[in-house]
Image 1 (tube, helix red, strand yellow):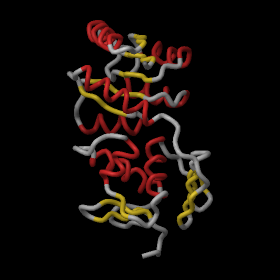
Image 2: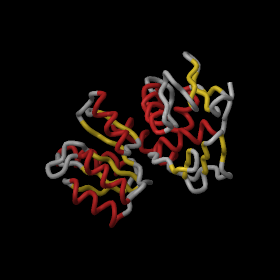
Image 3: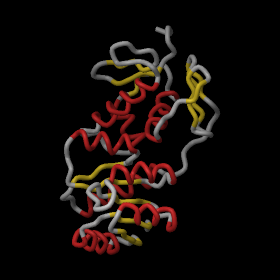
Image 4: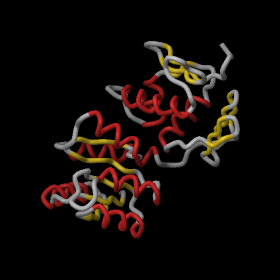
Length: 228
């Protein structure tokens, strides 16, 4: 059972979703607006948040940004918006998953279980150093030439997964399974988006790589500059 907070202004969707998830054994709370939802996250500490983007008081993306400043709770965006730009913005703002309306409750329940597994305890080990890059899973801090990198949770998880296999080509299928715990199927775009963000923060690009080297049709390899 999970404690789920639904932030959704449509009473019909809210009620139907709440009943369906309650029938599946979850404890469900709801808020109709972004600010009240944010306060509920702080006060009630839910296990998962289901966040609609089209809220009456504050846009859902702004709510997500504010939420990420105060909590690491997994967030699944549920919305009728289905264009690539909205998906990228939601992921960039800190969403753990994105489900487009209409959706089946079984599908959503599977996504909830997935984000709960991903937010569970992870293997802890010492810092990993690759060239001037250091990744410490204990503190969840990554530094480049001694300067901290400002990474989202998923960016850090992706960098850590690659650092743990430094020098090896890791497939997108492996990364999707390990970092997102999702089956491969259209998920390569999710991996590509996060790799693009990582490259930018590492001061490189796909055309001029320093640490992240792509092998077309195979995967990506993390290696120190000049190690080839």
